[in-house]
Amino acid sequence: MNEIINKVANSTLEIFDLEDYYPTGVRTQIDIAQWLEEGFLLKEKNFREALKNHDWSQYQNHFVAIHCSTDAILPAWATILVTVHLQPFAQKIILGKKEEIDTLLYSEILNQMDYSIYQNKPVILKGCSKKPVPETAYVFAIQKLQKVAKSVMFGEACSAVPLYKTSK
Image (tube, rainbow, N blue to C red; front, top):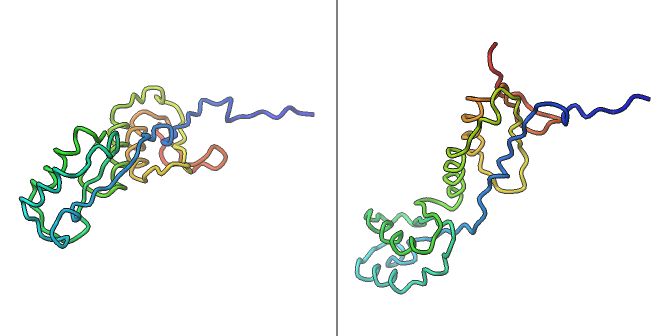
């Protein structure tokens, strides 16, 4: 009887799993409309007072997205002032929706990584994660991997879809 050989385990194939780089922490969205008159009108004195009286410590170590859920026209300083209050507590602050936090975090993480371990090797960009990895992170990752890897596939070792291969 022939021995079963695991060719994947014995290959030089590298797995690049974005889930391994998922930044842990609470994601929070703050809606500026809560401090506007009827959700639309910014009265500076009232706005400043509401921000002063808000408990900012509840956002300790959070990743925070500031946005406005209404069509209010806000001066640029309004979001900046909210940021001033948040900064001593939040880990990261963005202007946008909560879903955009991970896109920014992955961009920062992937730009700081050393990809030399993938140099001239076949790589699988692992799909199917249990954590909410944004699709944009895969776009960021392929751009980095394509510069160093011999080839890049997407998915799992048993059913990978070829994406890129260096020309000979």
